[in-house]
Length: 334
View 1 (cartoon, one colour):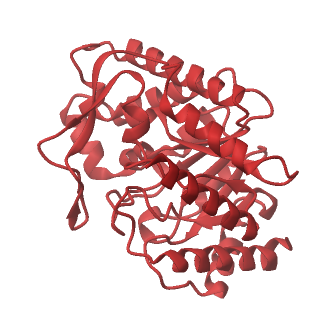
View 2 (spheres, rainbow, N blue to C red; view 1 turned 45 degrees about the vertical axis):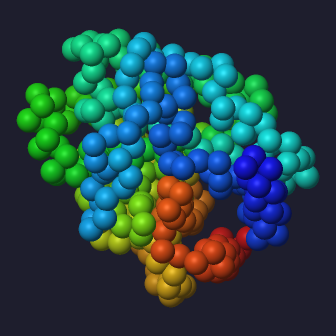
View 3 (cartoon, rainbow, N blue to C red; view 1 turned 135 degrees about the vertical axis):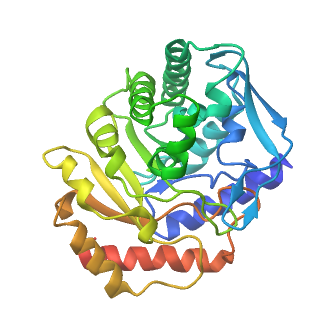
C-alpha cells in the first residue's frame, strides 16, 4: 500500500510542478479524513467508530470520530512527520517549488464532543493550554524537517459563524463570543514560537464532503478574532464560492497588515468551469476592501476532504487549476 501511495504522490508532485504551482502538497493521499488522521495521532487523542457519522446537506459521513482519552500532548512519533519528510525529499530544491504541509487547526479540537470530556472536566483553560502546546511542538517538528509552509485547516471558525451552531453552544452554557476568544488563544499558543521564515496559512471552509456543505454564514462574527486577535497568520484561505460565505467587507480589517487573503472563488464541489469575467469582477469587488497586492485566488477548498472525494472527475480538477492560473495572469500579470 505504501509503495502505491508513494507512486501516486510522485506523480502528483510532477503534475503540480507542470501546472506551475509553487506550493506543492501530497494531496493528503495517505489520509482517509482531512482531519481525523492527524488528530487521533496526537498523544491523549484516539479515533473510534461512532454510532453515526456527521450530517451534511443531504448526505452523512462514515461513523468515525475522535475523542479525548488522556492529557493532550505532542507525539514525537506522529506518522505525519515521516509523510512530510517523503514529500519534502521528493519536491526537492529547484529554487521555486515549496513542500507545503496541511494539518487541521487546533480549533478542530474545540468542538463540544471533544472539548467537553472526562479528562479535563470544566477546566477549558488547561485544555486550551495543553492543546496549544501540543501543536506548538508539532509545528516546530515539521519546521525542523524542512517545512517552510504550513496550513491550518479550520472548519471550526465556520461552525462559529453558523447561527444554529451558536444556539447549540448557548444551550451548552458556552457564550460563542467566549468560545471565539478561546480559539484565538489556542492558535496564538500554537504559533507562539513561529520562525520568521515559516509561512503560516489558515483555511476556513463551511464543510466539504461529497460535493456538499455543512455550515453557512459570513465572516462578520469572527472578523475581529481571525484578523485582529490571531497574531501569526500570513495567509488566509477564505471560502467565497457562493452566498453562504457572505460579503468581502470583513477583509478591510486587514488593511495596513502584511497578511494576504486567498479568495476561494472557484468551487471545488462541481465540474463546471466558472466564467473568468465573473471571477475577475469578484476579485475587483474584494479589492475595494483590501488592495490587489494582498489578494490571490484559489479553489474554495480541496477537491477531496475525505477518501470518498467530491463529485468532480480527476481531469476536471486540473481544468479548474488551469482556469485559476489563467485568471491570475490576467489580474496580477503572473
